[in-house]
Image (tube, rainbow, N blue to C red; front, side, top):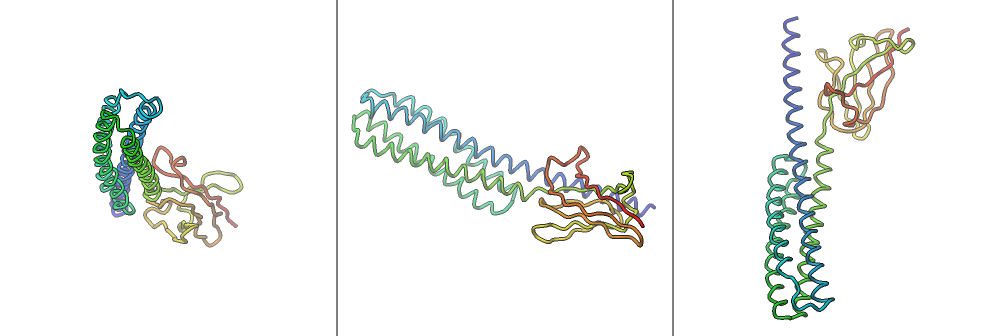
Length: 262
């Protein structure tokens, strides 16, 4: 009994460590996603301010168009874009999921574009002050292009971070048996063990002697859960798609199999 207790304690410690490690990865991916969303919002804010300036100067022919307000908005937002580009690079590196270099490259490109937005905006101010509408029109088009690139790359980062998060998710599953006739609970240890087959990859996971009813850290996916039959008894199968909504307060998804005996 002492040996079993030690093994179970080790299993619980491993379970807690794996759960904490997984949560850290998920938190880092959430930070990556949220940072990219802030970049997208700030780039769109500058784009809206640029549109207001464009209409005032090129459409309304206002030679005294309020370029100062645009520059103020641009400067503040680009500072935020620069800061959160660094956040993206940091957090995806911490998460170390999939190919972090892909997201880091996109964040670096966003940060590089921030410099071009500042440079071209300063040139735009000069063009407007000199009432050089042709140069201003060209610069506005270039700035809009840089901002559109920032927005597009931020969306791509969010998409990639979401995909990495789905892959990073693992689940803990507990098998429960109920009598097929009465619905009464049956101890899971009544049967020799259980298996879980990933329906997409064909990978099979098994319980063991010390955790006969428990699967720890199953990757996200759809599984068929089966029981090993005894001499004169067994259980039905169940196909379950692992999903956060199924996780109970104890951190487990419960899969119920119907027990039968001859």
